[in-house]
Image (cartoon, rainbow, N blue to C red):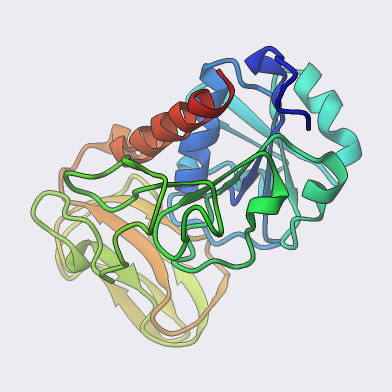
Amino acid sequence: MDNNVQRPLRDLTIAIKGAGEIATGVAWRLFQANLCKLFMMDVDQPLAVRRQVSFCEAIHEGSKTVENVTAVNVNSADEFKKVWTGKNIPVLADPKWESIGRIMPDVVVDAIIAKQNLGTSVNEAALVIGLGPAFIAPDEVHMIVETNRGHNLGRILLEGSAEPNTGIPGSIGGYTVERVLRAPAEGVFVSYKMIGHRVATGDVIGVVNDTPVMARIDGVIRGMIKSGIIVSKGLKIGDIDPRGEISYCDTISEKARAIGGSVLEAILRKFN
C-alpha cells in the first residue's frame, strides 16, 4: 500500500487474528466506527470461554451476533466482499493467516492474546498492532496495546513491551483465580449448567470424564466452553462472575471495549 495516497478511513482493510472475546470487542468497536472492511481469523475448533460475546462462535454455528453486530462464517477470502456488502463481518478458520497474504490488508491486529508472539511481523501490513505481552515495538509490531487490567489498561506503546503476564486473572468483585473454572483432568468436558445460570460455592458445574468441576464462589456463569470438547488438564473452561448480573453474559466487557477503543486510536494515529 502507498502510504502517500490519502483514502477514506472506511476503505481501510483490517485483518484481526483471533475471534475470541477481546478480538470481538476490537472488531465490534471498529465496525461501530464505520471501519467495516474487517475480517477475522481463528482456529478450526475455537475454545472461547465467553462464547456469548465471541465472533468465533460463527465457525461453530454459521453466524454470531454480538450487540447487534453479526459475524458470518466463510470458507475463503473470496467470500469477504459478499459479507461486507451485507454489512456483516466475515470470520474464517485460518490458523496460519493465509488470508493476509491474499488480501494484503492495511492493518493487522494480533488479538489472539496468546501471551507470546506466534509469528506476527511488522511486514504484514502498513500498521501492525499487538495486544498484550510478548510483542516488542517497533521490531515485531508498530504499536502495542496494554491489556493488563489497572491504570495502564488500553495504553498504546510505541517502544518496548506490554506488562508481563502475571498468570493471575484480573480481579472482579474481589475475586481472581477463584472465579475461573479449569479442567481438573484431561478428557471430555460435559457441562451440567449453561451460561447465565446462577451457581453457589460447591455446585458441580460439569465433569471431565468422571472428575467434577466445582464452583468456588457464588455468582453467574459468565462464560463456558462447549460441552463435549476434549480438554487438557488446567485449561480454562469457564468463568463465574460474582457480581451476579446476568446481562453481563451477553454484553462486551469494559476491558474489551477499552482495548477496542485503543485499537481505533492507533489506526487514527496512523491513517487520519
